[in-house]
Image 1 (spheres, protein in one colour):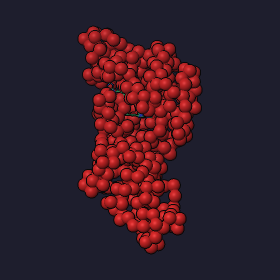
Image 2 (tube, helix red, strand yellow; image 1 turned 45 degrees about the vertical axis):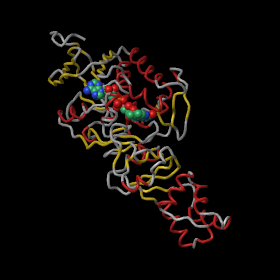
Image 3 (cartoon, helix red, strand yellow; image 1 turned 90 degrees about the vertical axis):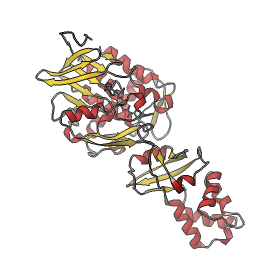
Image 4 (cartoon, protein in one colour; image 1 turned 180 degrees about the horizontal axis):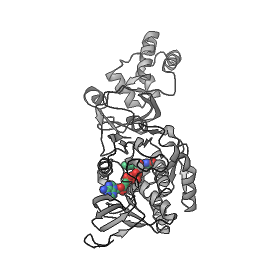
Length: 400
Ligand code: FDA
């Protein structure tokens, strides 16, 4: 680009701020349509979150992705874009680039080899569309006038009739996350719904944390329930609280003070099972029986701190019923989350009521677009967030 002091700014059809999943997808779609596109990325490389995602193998979509898998103050907003660019569309792109992949569980698709292949795919497609990408480039100012947008950057000045904000959320600041998109939205008169960390480990304190002391690393299948949502998957005990897929999922539905419950025996009716055990092995200690259904150390700890352990024959029905009720509806008292440092996503963001659901364009400022995580649309764990990035990026790239 020309130096900032140069008289002639470089002209593009669209400038995309953010070289992440949504920004690159938008750029390649617009580039394919012959639009001259500039992507501005302030980190030293594009797609850093893609690279670190899915344990280095990128869970790039979910075969079952539907609007029901997303949280938003306006649940209808994501429907149009998701319907027009489906998981099958992204899979077709992956196959065209001969990237080997597999389904891990619950419709989650991962690369067989490396997340780098997804970034390479996006860069190759961008190159084919003549997209210009500037990494290590920061936006100094954004002006809007008759002819569109004028951006002064650390690499020069650029103008375009369309400006796409794809700068993501606040999660993992060390990867380049910034509040830039929210600030820009506010500056142009947009409402930004309160943001908070989602898909994030929960922290415990006091007695609940003491009860788990020394159990860090233990994992067990549970069902987590909060505010009408329920997820069945694993819980992992950490040094400061709890994590694992079931907890990450439910964390997006939890606010401090909300009632959060766990079914510690999600695959059975606890009362029936305890009665069967009592009949089958009346002399066995309760702790031994419980250790058949839960990790041994976890079961022992429950018996040390919550339930006393006696031979099974000594329990009356009412006692077994009370124990079963506790195991199936265990209150998890969390005191907070690990925050943006470890969160996979940011909940809240640019209010969708002020955006077009077919083009992602601002209803306030013509030519201004918001896509990806900066918008108040947040997916579950399992490839849904990338699917939103691809779908919103396509919708925008096809509209510019
Ligand atoms: P994204 O954050 O990808 O990109 C935004 C870009 O804008 C970044 O490159 C950033 O540096 C840049 N930027 C920010 N401010 C800027 C500024 N002022 N100027 C210029 N550039 C700026 N999802 C999923 O579906 N499957 C998965 O496996 C995972 N795994 C996963 C692991 C981890 C550790 C995290 C943190 C997240 C995930 N996710 C995920 C979530 C997923 O990464 C996320 O939802 C998408 O990357 C969002 O795409 P965006 O393009 O909107 O933002």
